[in-house]
Length: 397
Ligand SMILES: Cc1cc2nc3c(=O)[nH]c(=O)nc-3n(C[C@H](O)[C@H](O)[C@H](O)COP(=O)(O)OP(=O)(O)OC[C@H]3O[C@@H](n4cnc5c(N)ncnc54)[C@H](O)[C@@H]3O)c2cc1C
Image 1 (cartoon, rainbow, N blue to C red):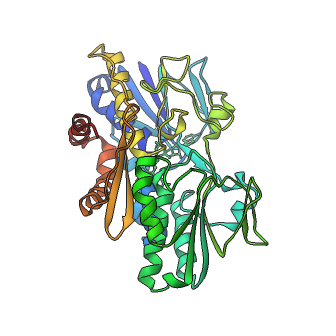
Image 2: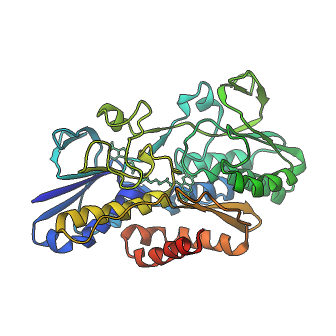
Image 3: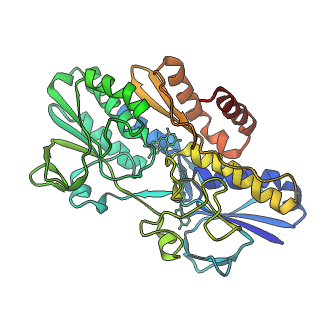
């Protein structure tokens, strides 16, 4: 029996395991292939909803499901962490000491937002990246905030979901306007990028909108530390920005297992081929989604598309069916601008994001993608997504 092991039951790992179960159903039923998903979290969190929780007061429980309810019956689920991957010997060791051999391995361990990487940040700030419960603390902090300076700082790149901090500035503005206290609140956005969004074409749209709404944007701001006692964010250049409420996008790193197993770089990002997602030097080990060092946004849509390609390539390598597919760097991330409007940051490795105006229709598309998330993980919506992304290729968008 050949064994495919997937490590990490987030967006990429869950979808990939389910797609393999579907593509290899005959081989699995006849005992030729086994597919195992090992994940350290018995629950699955829909992370984009952290913005809903932080800025609209949604309840975290609404966006969390049990991992085993999301998996095909053809996938064996091991609910434990992987401590070490011995890539040269094709086997891994779990937290309970289980040893698993594999013929194909997919590492989908995501990224970790870690406020402790910046001195002072953990004790001084709230954030909507580390968990839905931490996102709920942002909502609590806003609910009791009457007047003063709210500062949002991007404390490291890369981070999950490039649009999230810019989106948060729009949602903060909207929140205080709706409460009728916007004139008592100063909003400041500290970003290491030259503009309010990393891609200039998108910044050209959103920066004037933020400025019009009275948001101060301080570009090229590289955080050094937070002076929690003095309530100041301090940059590497020594610039000090005072705050009353500090919201952070914490620095991110790859999973610990990638460092311990000497697969990742010093920050834990796994070097992988940008088209095939094979880990450098290996043709039977893949890394997908946030876990890689591939120069592409750390987003669910990337994990989704890479999962589809790797599932296809592993299945065709096993069955000897049609050839390899290639990931072209497609991204398609929504950016909500308040007032029930959104735009999409959409492009590929060779086509940078185009100018796109926020519209009501795009906002409704963002909402409908979110409502389809749990079905998407099962793999049953792939034909619809294939049509959607094929159309984008044909339109050159
Ligand atoms: C506020 C916010 C808003 C976002 N908005 C969007 C959006 O609008 N659109 C979009 O496309 N993306 C969005 N994202 C990003 C998206 O959620 C992530 O990029 C996506 O979940 C990455 O998928 P992944 O499979 O690579 O990692 P994850 O989904 O994070 O999954 C990694 C899994 O691996 C497990 N794991 C880690 N280490 C081990 C180990 N040693 N052993 C076993 N298991 C392990 C983890 O517990 C986790 O279950 C957003 C994220 C945030 C925080």
